[in-house]
Length: 87
Image (cartoon, rainbow, N blue to C red; front, side):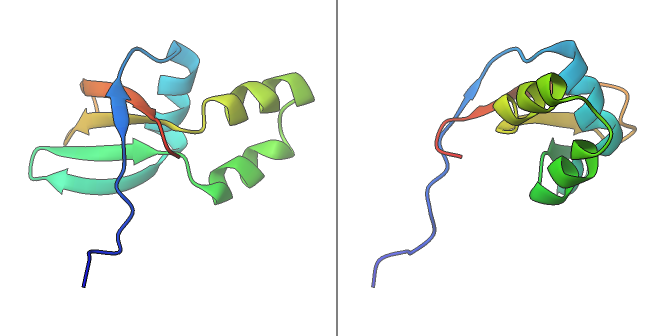
């Protein structure tokens, strides 16, 4: 039987500073190693912001909802960042 998990394609690229700051402060967090975490958007985050920002800002946020950061354990250093292609 084939593995049924969806393959995730991503590319490493720079993302806007404001998106980085939002991910660091509010992003969903998953431990990757003892030295770092993955920060990413989840649906709950988008819903939370929807009532606190104007429509233009919301569209900007949605346009970048496939972005991610890999951040150090102390959450002070961004190790890498990018976008999921097939999100």
